[in-house]
Every structure is written in structure tokens, then in C-alpha cells.
Length: 206
Figure 1 (cartoon, helix red, strand yellow):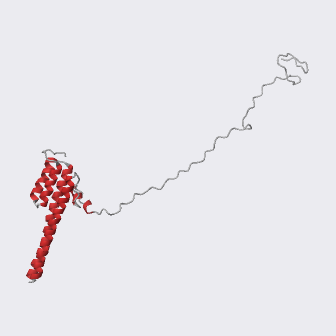
Figure 2 (tube, helix red, strand yellow):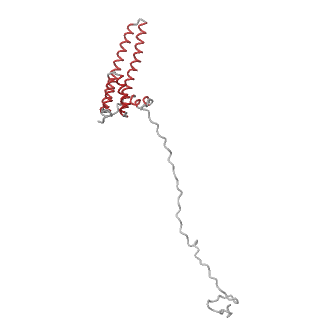
Figure 3 (cartoon, helix red, strand yellow):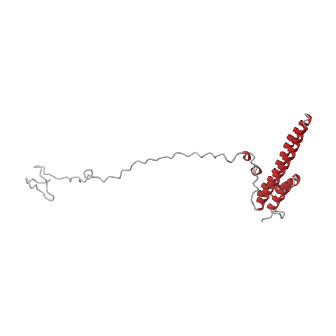
């Protein structure tokens, strides 16, 4: 198990924070949280210490609100001389206070067991708030995620390629230019190469 800057492992510091939380020692929880944030500066430990601090704050705020509600009703019924109802409100206040304390202990033990295994405390709602994401703590995780928009497949049409056709014999010009033929000036008969006279009329070739 890794140790922090002052020789204490982050898990041990987190266990101490949740232990003070279960013992209802808010000042000690605040001191341990300040030590984790200012001295150790470990991201994992910061999250656990913040969860212990937020759990302590949530417990005392809930206890304060329920005390106001049931205490106010008890005083109201006392002014109305409804002493039975006022006593019932006092008992309800004590029952809610005991229930809140048991819930505090249960959540602290749950967090300690997870922290000792090197995991995040994972307290409901508080775990998200410890990371600074207060809005995400109140968003239901059961909402289906929006399905991504799928682009319509693009169909690419290729023009058929025509293979090159072999040139036909009719289109190929294989004719050679005709050689200039010398003719006799007298009878227009073709003159033979190397002869000085026309073999048809006997005229002299110039």
C-alpha cells in the first residue's frame, strides 16, 4: 500500500475521515479533509475526504431541518393545548434523529469497506458531488442516452467503363501513298526505270 508525503497511506487517511464522520465529529472531519487537500494533494484521497465531509454536512443539515419541522409542530400543538400531539411530534423527532444516525453509521462503514480495498467510497449522490459535478448528482442514470444520428449511406454509382475496342481493318488506313509514276509525254505510257526511250512509241525520254 503506497504511503503519502507524511508516512500515512491515502486509504488510512480516508478511513480516519469516515471514522470521525461516524462518530459525529465534524471539526475532525474538516481537519482531515483540509490535511488531504492542502498537504497530501492526492486526487483519490481528495475525493474520499470530500465525500466524508459532504456526508457530515448532509447529516447535520437533514437533522437540522427535521428538528425544525417536528419541533415547530410540537410547539404549535403545545400552544393549542394538544399535549398528546405535541408529545407524538417529540417522539417522531427522536425517531427520525436515531434513523439518521444509523444511516450515517451504515454509509460510513460502507465507505470504509470500499476504501480499504483501494476503491472509491461510492456514496450515492455524494460521490458525484465530490468531483465538483453537482448537477450530475441529481440527474437520473436511468434516462436512455440519445441515440447518435446515423448518416444515410451514400450510394456511389460508377459509370460502366467500356473496354477499348480493337480497331477494325476497315478503319485502319494501311494504304501507302502511291509512288509518282513517270509517263511518256507523247503517248502517256508508263516509263520504265533506266530506259531512255518509251517502249510503246519509241519517243526519247527527256
